[in-house]
Image (cartoon, rainbow, N blue to C red; front, side, top):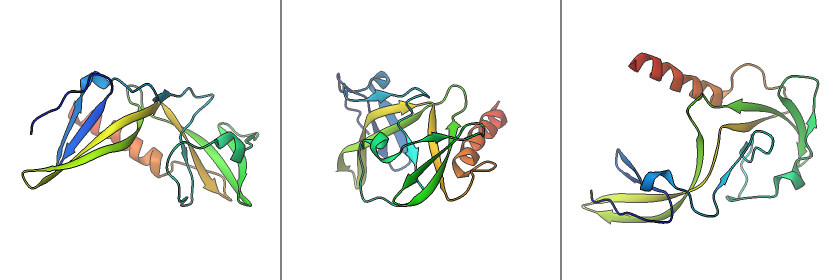
Length: 151
């Protein structure tokens, strides 16, 4: 597979099982890094027919509870409880958008543009306190297990 090179932005190319990250992980001018205080990444327990940035602060009037790392909010009449999930040291969560797809040698090649990165995310549960590890924390634990097994 031939790699293209962009000078202004990061992109990743996925072809079957091959992932190629090009151009030294540089982001475009619209990409965002988020701090824990203003975490921009939210996982909601519902399906929303929208993809893209949203004015989350308008929809979530978060209230701190008397429990470590847990906040409450209401969305469309449902109480949501939040738990801040941090990724392991040395890792980040990237948000990307698909910029184009092409076919070469009967193989679809997809290119993704980096839109932002975070070291933590907001995981929301509907009507119940987030207890114990959730699916995302289980996946992040798998990263640490795989890393330890490979050493």
